[in-house]
Image (tube, rainbow, N blue to C red; front, top):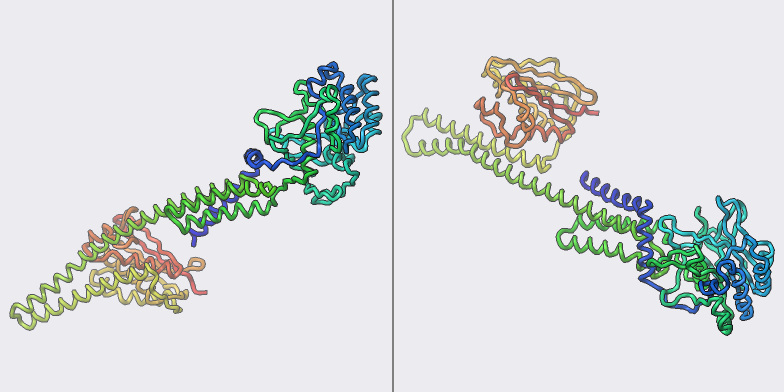
Length: 606
């Protein structure tokens, strides 16, 4: 049971470590890499775009005098676009500062002709306010949308776009969202879980980071159409392509704009901010929403993988365990992809890391447990082999005596007295042999837990006095005195016969291994909720190594060999098991040449 609890705790630790590691900055970065990989792997089928980009590219700016002519170029482009009747126009060029009057006047005139105009704004440093368009421009717009990029803080990749930002109490919606709302004149209805814009439900839950929209960029082979102002000037007929579209106008010149960012599709290339906003608009317009999997499902998935790894190595082995473990690893890698195909963003690292940690932990546990069991089995086999050799050797003496006596009785004529002596020897050796076999079987039954303990109530003094009366004749033969102080009257509950066996074994061992003319001391007292019963002799004693092994089955100490006393070496093993099965313990103190003290500690009856 203890091993099972440790194993379960090990699996729980693997799960918890996998989850916690996935919450770190490094873990989030791994999840982002996995997200980008799946993003590129599973590209949606191309759809008819509802937006277009009016680009202020390098050729346009070069033809109009560089960046200084940007507002003039924008005005010229919007004049052409407005004539094509687009649904809405979103400008991604900050217009917070005045430029040359001719350019501003031309841009103001173009804005007057532009339907459903949405102008940009951005947060001022330290988020103290908004960098709004000049009043002469702002009054011509139906909305002002913020153009904050919302880049990932770890790698500056544009995966999400904040749909709302606030400077103090002044909140602004994203440029893409305002463009979508302006295109059909809808209102934005809010709830904690989503936004409703003209019947389009945007799953953007309100969190501490605001409402975030995962941008579903169009396939690489089907980007948003882009026409530059220079192309419009050269071919005015191209303006017809803007009819009925939502137009995003902004800089795309790589040398003149810093508003260019990497996306999940990027492979060293970058995308202009105006195209990122247009992509966010396409995500909303086509309802290509990517929603995050609930946190509870991520935790449960990682837990299921961890439990699967634990069960795999708990009940399977060999190739079956390896196949099952490989299946769990494959599932951990495939589930995020399968979820992504259903437009659900399922974190990659929590489940993958948890299952790998669980597999390593479970496999290591199984390896060491099996090695331990194998070592224990081998040790037990050797011990049993030695025990059988020992028992065989011990049995040989009484068997030889019985066999020899029997042959002598059968072959030779003997006097009645001699025949009686032989018969008595046979009886004695037969009893000795039977006792050895019974003791050997008893220790095996105790080890297997096959002996049912009786439930009796008795005092420690009763047991000690009974054993003392039985041991006195043995002590008197060796002229050994046994001193017994006041015996404890605390009551014990258990199998009296087995307790007597245990105490008598210790007492007779003291007599057996003590020189003639010495003393043995019996003592007992209560120690908290236990009764302590001790037997101290003045015998040969034991060293530290022997004390550590004295309770091993079939182990015979030096004192047993030096004393010449016969013994099986399993008596103390039985004593220890009897005491432990009664919820007690046995202690031993000894020193070579100074005797030994064995103490039984047994629970007092409550």
